[in-house]
Amino acid sequence: MNARIDATKPVVMVVEDEAGLVTLLRYNLEKEGYRVVEAADGEEAMLVAAETTPDLLILDWMLPVMSGLEVCRQLRRRPETRETPIMLLTARGEEGDKVRGLNTGADDYMTKPFSLPELMARVRALLRRRHPAQAKGVLTFEDIAMDLTAHRVSRGGRAIHLGPTEFRMLQYFMQNPGCVFSREELLKAVWGPGIYVESRTVDVHIRRLRKALNLPNEIDPIRTVRAAGYALDTEGEAGVATKELP
Ligand code: CA
Image (cartoon, rainbow, N blue to C red; front, top):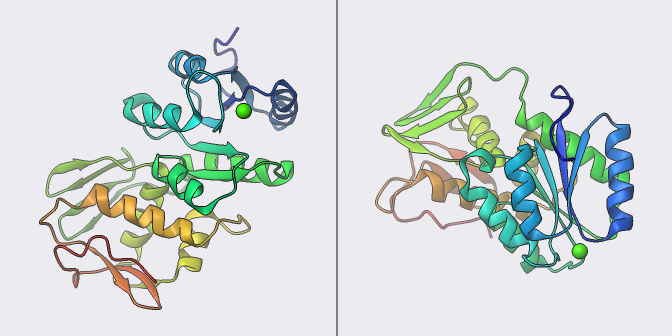
């Protein structure tokens, strides 16, 4: 039932135990031309994800058997779903939970009850970012190399694994080395115009990018510019990898 039928349509997997919400999401996603696969609990989600390799997941936090956060964590450990965009849904609205969700590997986050047009816009944006139109060739900065064609990143020859958002962020920095970007500018460049994401989200992804790029004694190539933003340049220092904007 969940086997891939039309390989040309992006597959969106909806992981949610509220049947009414699944019906609503399925109806609207199919109307937009996506194929929809479903799972109603965390364990089923892992099985269906392995079977169908979805292009994007809409994942509820509160699920039977295994939480959405745990599903997210486990999917990120599998090579085939390491870079699959994940939109986390939750009834909780606390800032700490959002950060926790994003730190677990989700790319975006919406609090229930959400606006359906906004969710659809974010789904489109996440899928667009997964298949960037003009991204070809190799970018280099110091010892960092970014192969946009093969979608590979390395530092000093060591492979770096980035989630889709960190990949886009690093790509933007590497296309504009030395430029200082505010959180708002990064939001627009990495998430796309018209997508509402809280500016603190930028810090979460900067932290993830730094963690992926830097070994403990390596120079952090991302500079935090007080009251201005972030830049990729050669003035970084070793051991300041956790510094963030106030
Ligand atoms: Ca639920």
